[in-house]
Image (cartoon, rainbow over all chains, first blue to last red; front, side, top):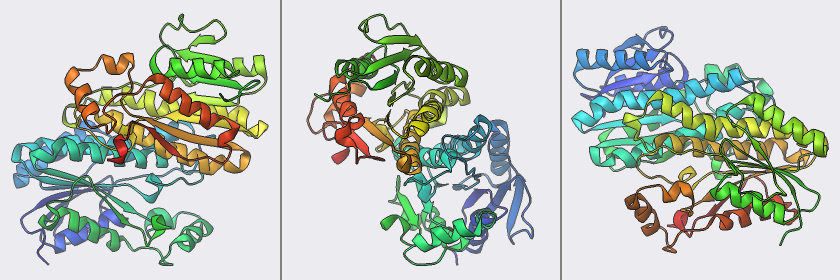
Length: 239
Length: 239
């Protein structure tokens, strides 16, 4: 119940799905949580604050971090969870959709890490958790921009892990498989059924399954874990 | 040597280093090669068609592929080699520099594949090779944007491989280790020494080592090979 007591966390895309579950669980575990999202969580998770954030806006990131520092004096955990998807393949994806997906899923992660590193490097501690995807690892049909961006997140995570290990900052990736979220709810039922059928455990994850992985990586019990990829996918990638 | 007589090939970033060696090797194997670069390519052999080409420009990609279609009526081989590096650490990387590197290394590869697919899909054959890097799989400190973009190249390659396998198109990635090129020779002695120390073979590779791998991957000998990451790195990634 108190694995994150005293820690200050920012969770992007925290209004719903995996981000929401992570914000909830972090608060239950004693963290001070700022839910950063374009929309407000409804209902607001108990014990959390909301900050409006467009993760593609570098000035908004600076303002958010300044606000967190003004309110709490430190930042211990950043979860870069905000993400969007596009289903077009390489042959069809438009420049606009390509840039939109890279903007949120990839550039947003870069900007978040850069902004969070400002206090974390100064305090010489911190844990950053970036959400990638099984589609950041193996090929799938369609989803070209999403695959590129989620692959980039893994690279950027390892890069930051190696670059800042000696500064006390840990950086890890969480790789969900199929998770029941508002994002997957909007997908065609056949597509969802297909991925779940490929999953050795035979069912999809709930957002809380991913959130528990984030708690582990945020807590001090993972102090020796950096540059790591925590796969929470019901065995999908092990096939 | 592989016989690529009658094949039509396009190689980007061919003015020097790896791209130069790849264009030369494909031409030596009998392919009709178009070599592109933003830089001067006058020292490529007369039997190679050269063209000025910025890989971040979608309209220029269309023009290059239109020209190939007009002259040859087909495109069999695309080697996305053009790339730029940047040595900034994540916490000091500007958004502008991020976009510059992601633009060439990642969006450039998307645009190239998309245009090549325009000809390859109707002809139901084709081989794409994307030049990534050991930084697409491992990590060193600094070079944050380079890391992200090279990881993205690997997932995009797998995406293309899975998406277009049934249309007779193969897509693979080559991951060069430390290769003696103007780019690496221009790096600090310190950085180069660190790479070579970390290379089990203890020596760097030559651009021709990468060209040999590309020639294999685009040849019919590799007809059952798709979605692969082929390191040519003196053992760097095996450590």
